[in-house]
Length: 274
Image (cartoon, rainbow, N blue to C red; front, side, top):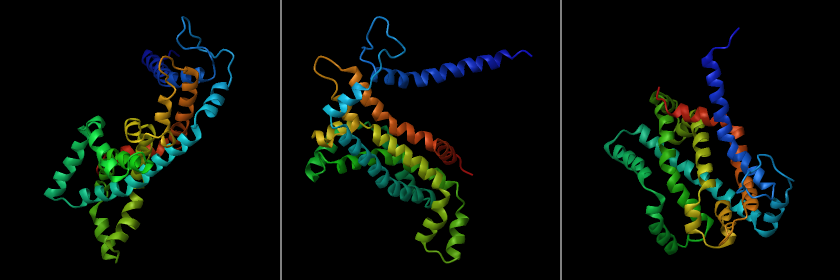
């Protein structure tokens, strides 16, 4: 039985897409375990004389462990701070249809059009005056400010999908407003909370601009800033940089592998009101 030409075309396209998406990660790993520069006339797709010397060098020469802990603190702190704020704002925008809330929702959405570079100087001056400059706590606050708008709108879609009759039934049964939100509403929006938490975590983990602007001491660097330190004035040690990049990308990849289903269901569930 002959296979339809359309199926063959789809298979070819799928193979090309998978290769295109995964090749950069593969190439990064190859460069991390070989001393050969990637800028050669005929670079090899397979590692020549592979070794883990680059990983050993960067762990001895750079405080990779401290940078990793700092990045984890910032990412987890951003999630812990942004989730309650996003949930409260999303619930308010969803349940209380007022003119002020409508204007506030549009204002929150409009902040997405502001680039980080536009606000860098005001935030830097503000943090210098408030003592948040060169502190991981300040970096958490800055990241939270830029994760909140998207988090609020994603969670608002989940709250919109929950009938208001559930709120009224819970109140009739004797629940307070806090009990109604915590015991009735929040379990239903848990997939959205998971999706938004992942979004905030990955955004904070990868963030570079604020980390480079608001933190100066090397002891408070995060991994994204630490990667830039492998670039010297005239040369770049590609093996060491790629080894650090491999360590930098492992946590988000592992996290995404374990919670991919929850992320997809969360994002699609919040996109539909019904």
